[in-house]
Image (cartoon, rainbow, N blue to C red; front, top):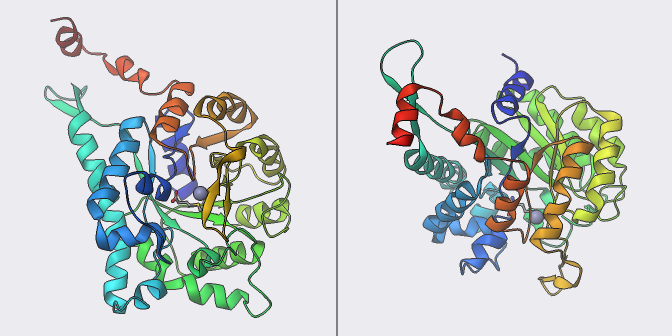
Length: 349
Ligand code: MET
Ligand SMILES: [Zn+2]
């Protein structure tokens, strides 16, 4: 089965639309983590892995069917500048995936339901389908200088600079046991092109999704045309979904319609809470934020417009994800899995 078909199958299993988790780094901060560091959330891979596992679990309990790892700002170059060896840096990348898989195992252990095995007499454990997506943040995220939201890398940064920067990380994460790679917050077309070439040249054999960020509802943050960026993603067979993350909810509907003009791949969206990040004072400016109810009031509209994967980015929380899950009629479906006599007896006795 091809990568695209695998993703289609997952979508079918979860009822046509999938719930992604919410803001990861900002949720770690709510738990008390100090992320004022060039490694941002990846700092916790070193200092507090238990917190990472807890946040993943909180999102799973809230209804997330895809959890995104803590590797957004985990880079080999970043770890090396902290004194880690190349090997240790690679191990930390793999660790981000292992912690997410561990959280999924704990969740499955807690919630697996025994159901009738049609082909034999025994019971089989029925598990909610859950994917672990290995996060890859942009070069600008590594620079931690605000260029993640300007997309402006200057003239000295070429396609090859970006490919050299990302190559090993992509290879390591592709072999880590993750189900897919989430290339997140892509700020310009150069980086999208670099990712496509890396996926193709390195025989990456897990699917990927590309999500761009926008601050005007038309273009990606660098000013590059979203249509052009989404077409680059569309050109690669390994890219199984295209969309938007870390962008205010008010822009999402129009952005979905734009993306649909150039691709038939499933659309993925996980907006932020609508607040904006001020990279000078290193704080989120709250004035323009939306409440969980407002955020979720858009969900049905986004789904109707064509989004198949829906979650939240910075400053959204497990409560946001719970509300999205409810808006998409999830987990209530658990009861419909009670189909055999034994299950019914268990339910009524
Ligand atoms: C700046 S966007 C950050 C995305 C990352 N997956 C996170 O939620 O932390
Ligand atoms: Zn974000």
